[in-house]
Image 1: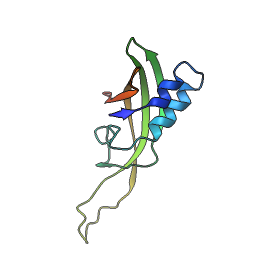
Image 2: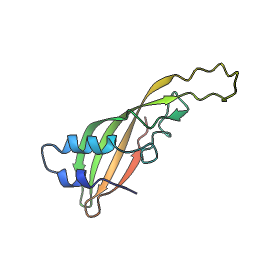
Image 3: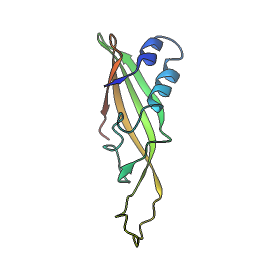
Image 4: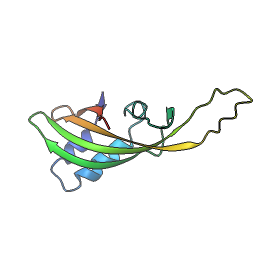
Length: 114
């Protein structure tokens, strides 16, 4: 499970949004549901991930963050030597909800429907 301890420590501070944004942008494709959020490409790239914090709120056990994630994907071809498919990067976007446990800083990241 992903741990967002810096975001948890910053909860209630004016810089919370920038801290959680930075934490999200440091996560990898395996930690974020980017592959599942693809709309154009077929393979999510593990670089140039940008986050936009849309909302945050608190419940008894968790800090909840809704974020937009901007990233790139490619349309992968068959990798044959004569494959005419260009390997161009495509811009992608998805929204996620991150639930950060207040005691452990463990974060559950869920892809939100369109």
